[in-house]
Length: 156
Image (cartoon, rainbow, N blue to C red):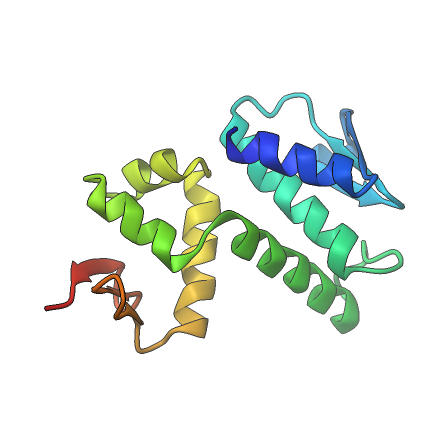
C-alpha cells in the first residue's frame, strides 16, 4: 500500500469523505466539515498524497474558515496542518532509508519516499527548524544534518 492509499484509508477510517472536484482559483485541495476535495488534475500518487496529507492535517488541527490568510490565527492553523502532513509523510529515519537505498539527490529521495519534490523541500525546511544541530539515531548508527544542506551519514 503506497502513501496515498494509506492516507485514503486513514480518511475512510475517520469518516472523512474524499471527492475528486475541480476547485476555484486553482487550489489543489480543500477541507470543509469532514469532506476533502482533491483536484482531479493531480496526476501522480505522490502529488495526491501530499495534498491529501495536508487536507487531513486540516481535519485534525484546524477549525472554522481559515481562508483569509491575512489573519494570524488562520496562518497558524495553516502551518499546523502542514506540520501534521510533514510528520504523517516523512520521518528522519525515512531519509536515512532513502540514503541506504542509494538515493543521492532530492529527486531520487522524493521518488523513493513517494512525495513531490516541493513537499520534500518544505518538509526539510521544517526539519531544519526542529533539528538545527542535526538528528542522530544512535541505535541505528546514523546522523542527518539539515544545515547547510541535507547530509546523511553513518555514525561510527
